[in-house]
Each structure stands twice: as C-alpha cells, then as structure tokens.
Amino acid sequence: MSASKLDIAPSRSALLFAVATVAMIVVSYVIVILLAVACAYLPYLLMTNVARENLQLLVLFVGGVVIAGAMLWSLVPKRVKFAAPGLLLDSASQPRLFSEINAIAAALNESMPSEVYMIGEVNALVAERGGS
Image (tube, rainbow, N blue to C red):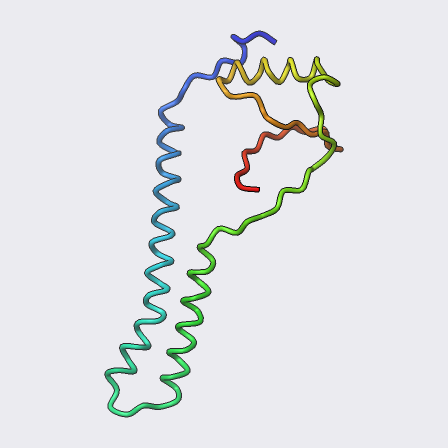
C-alpha cells in the first residue's frame, strides 16, 4: 500500500469537534459539581432558616449530602487493570504484519504501536491506555 493512498489531510472540522468535545466535558463536570453543591447546601440553608428543628429536615440534609457525595465520587476516574485481549505478537515472528503496520503508522504520521495482539475476530483496533 503506498503512502499517497493513506495520506489524510488535517481538517478544521475535526479540530472544531475536538474543541467542542473538550468544552462539553468541562461543562458537564461543572454542572455535576454545582448540582452536588446544591444537593448539600439547599437543605442546609433550609435547616438554618427554620425556627424549630424537625426530623424531616435532618433526613433531607443527610440525603442531600449522600447524593452529593455519590455525584462527586462518580467524577473520579476509576483505574481499570489491563487484561491482554489475545496473544501478544512480536516483530520477529511476524515481519510482514509489522512492516504493514509500520507503513500505515508512517502514512498517518503516528507512532508504531508498542504492543500488537492477535484476537479471535476479523477486526483491528488501536487504543491508548494510561496507568498500569
């Protein structure tokens, strides 16, 4: 496969979609944080402005704090251990496959994948993962 067939020109719309995606993620985090604050603060405000304390307000406040905690906990990224999806291949045993992967990576101006696995499907996937 020649490099000219795989040349992909950068697109302004792709950049726009990337910026919009990041903005939507930031806005959603801000909204969840504001909702969590409201869940805890509004019952507290109601409790402090009522002349006499009652059990219903205390239950409302505790429930609001629990819900706020759950909302904030859901924002924390969870660590997922990596499980190999199949048989790990190396370039010494599969030189033609790795030369094709290298040609595709070079045509797309991407780095060569550090690991290549054989799976039981007719499919291809490239994924970046962080952590351990």
